[in-house]
Length: 193
Image (cartoon, rainbow, N blue to C red; front, side):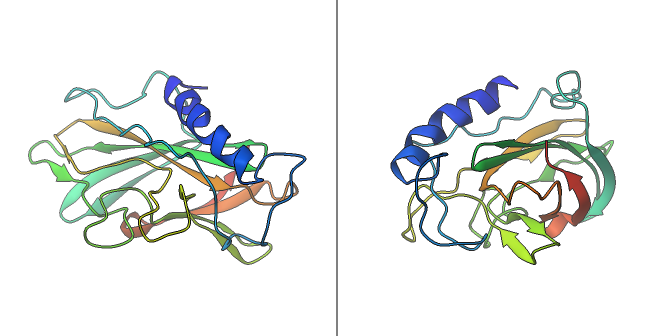
């Protein structure tokens, strides 16, 4: 487990315990559309790696990778982990700018609206049960922040950015889900470890 995942888990666990999201506690509602609980403290922002060094290249092996074209940019997306821990699951991935010149602005490409500079629009889809799991939030109101990366930055040529998002876990018998990455496409049959 990377240091970023450990930190995210430490921030999430106290809130999950108080909201009944940990094993042995009752949870209100059902399915992936339920209100998902998370940390009451701000989560760490994702930070870009130095230009020319893909993020986490030596730390995590990609589960699956894909090159895509987005706004005249060539990007590589490496899904590095989809890990279950009790009643939550954490997705981590890296986006690398493969352009030789020109930066790619992450901005709201993975957010829920044009001013949302997070990865809140990345969702998990359970094709067996027909459910969508949205990123966990640190409350129920409109101001509830997602438990996910903040990504209001530019990726320089060759630069990479590691990102994450936390979700309520699908049922234990679901071993694969689809990962929908907003404007960046869908990864099918991603294994849950």
